[in-house]
Image (cartoon, rainbow, N blue to C red; front, side):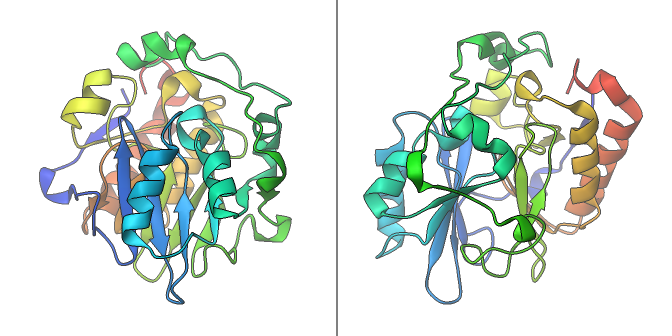
Length: 270
């Protein structure tokens, strides 16, 4: 099993774990609000079905104005379900990688989840999860092709990183000034296949992406390696608690090495 145990000392709360960023946990998945030096802010991911009221109320307690945009790490139901309602309420665009568009424009569903992958209650229940397609309408815009591996006005001072594997157009975000990484589902800080780990105990462990929805394990492994090479000091994952500390980069490199060694076995026990 590709996993790396993390000392509790590196586990941070969702609030105030890095300058200008705060998180909201919705059951087993996270969304993040990123404030920028000019006073604007951006919502990263948009949660579960029926969560728009929770996300909107949480954001309005922290900001006096709507965000500049909503940006998506990818299009799975637990990351996008409130996006259209919030975007219409706030009158803002939704940005995603062009390779996610078939799943965000009502044209194509993601492949059926593999309930046998990774083990655990979440994997077993995965055939019941919504798998799309969703339709975000004319609010949806692509990350500019020349900025997919660069910056975006909605995320100033951040680098967009194409990190495919979990989905074809999965992206992560990195702020080099403090080595802060928003990882999406490129990797997790708890075992996402297990209901008890993901939703209750939140064991501090580094794991690969949720196995039941990951489409390309070779690409996923390469993406983890790519992120590990950035030597992050702070990690904000889509599943699990944030991690902070000098040891985080080394732990992520260990996970990348495990994934590269395990090859196709990652699917069976992520």
